[in-house]
Image (tube, rainbow, N blue to C red):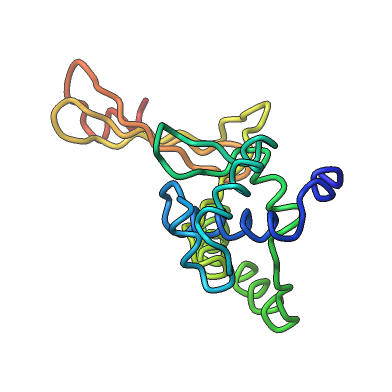
Length: 182
């Protein structure tokens, strides 16, 4: 990425940064006229088109279809994250508050839910947290609950209190006593 930084002059980096930020905000391909309206870009649409052509030649942006604006490529996003994006470190008080909120949770699901909410609050974007897939799953507990219309809810507790629910279609109705016996 350092080589790429030296290939892009300050103007190209500014145009690229504005393009990525606009694309992230709108989720639409970005054209030169849109970028020319950006307050921190004092360039004509023609100048922006020339810079965008250079960025396309470098593999930083691409056009999803003819006559569309441009969108960042994987290489472009990598450069944006590594060289252009600015981050604010959380304050000590913010870190303490987040830590306290996570520690108060009683199970893995609650910790993940709280973590996702905090990510969403911090980034002002959707937060998504996934637990890693384990190589080996140990079944700790199984419980079956009757549902309607020949369906049974299987509750599986695996590994460290991970809970998974599965609805099973059965050939006949089962009573709660039969499911407990199973």
